[in-house]
Image 1: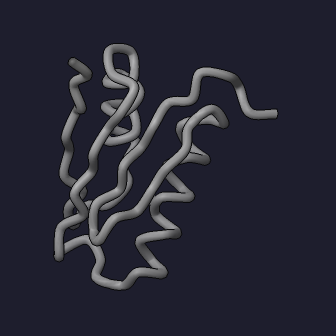
Image 2 (image 1 turned 45 degrees about the vertical axis):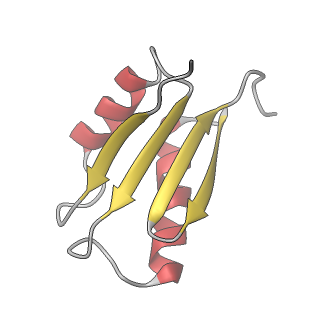
Length: 81
């Protein structure tokens, strides 16, 4: 059974500590589920920008999918060129 790590993104937004936590979590999990709280954002466009920034700061071999106000991050097997 595959486990999915779960995190919440709140009013502080994307901090270096949050990115480091995601990187450490990807050492043990392939999928991460991030719930975006109301205090962070309620606009879909800003949510997409946040997800793009997460992927950019994590590196190139990750993808994401936005469902409601939840961002699902996935570590890809091959490096994206």
